[in-house]
Amino acid sequence: MKKRTVGLTSRRAMYGYIFILPFILGFIFFMIKPLAQSLKMSFCDVVISNQGFTMSLNHLANYKRALLIDPEFNRLLTESVTTMIYRSLATIVFSFFVALILNQKFKGRTLARSIFFLAVILSSGVLVGLEYNNTLMQQLKATIEEAGNTNSITEVLEQILVSNTGGINATSTKLFNILFEIIDSIYDVAMASGIQIIIFLSGLQNISPSMYEAAQMEGCTSWESLWKITVPMVSPLMLVCWVYTIVDFFMKTDNQVMSKINDQMVIQLNYGFSSAMAWIYFLVCMALIGISSLIISKVVYNYD
Image (cartoon, rainbow, N blue to C red):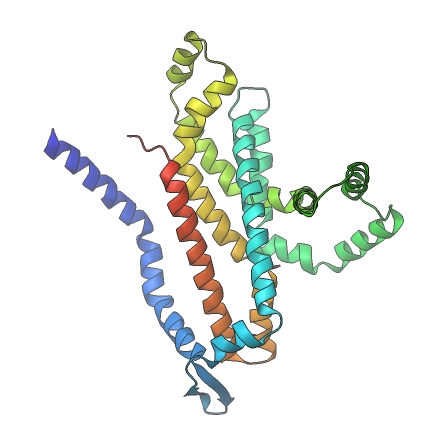
């Protein structure tokens, strides 16, 4: 029995490596050299001439400029990390409960699943480019905003709650602002939840119905089944969705840090400084993934 278990584990690991083999080969042949060159540029002054790049070592000057001299980078980095935290939490919660709804049996379930999967298609590069670069859509949006009320529903609701709540402190005000910012960005949250919904839905479908039947026979309510069966059984997928959401957020085209790095590289042609900011951004992203993964892995229920 021991040899059979080891053989099954090895076979599963081999299948996993086969699936990620294209990415490994692509990373080795297409990514290692640019990464090494970018890291080298971050420690150099890069001068562009007709002969190509000329790099002179300046040690940590680019990193000091990014962290200590540049007036925007630290602020943009802090705002990006803060927005990432609560936006990712909202994305995970939204996608999990949408997956719970789509896992129920009702008429038109296939159509509903297809509609939510459209978020994956609509968030592709071509349609995002059409959304941001279409002049007609921009003019239409501006016309609607001019013709409509200047205050949105969430702004009016926020004003009512804040004005009718006497003695509200700074912490509560900040929580209100974060809550209403999440509500205002529900479109972005829904657009970023397509893959997570599919992952959660696949995990929910792998839970045996007999577990819910046994819990129901023991008098367990639906709320108790959610926290005692569904959440523990799906918790390993929460870690996967969390890592994916963080990486997806940091790579968004409307990210202010990414925009600053691109401006320094493309417009200012400051390759050394932009490379230093990119590596700082990358290290912050990896640190957040490592810390959050360590915390989440402590509460993940692992089962065979």
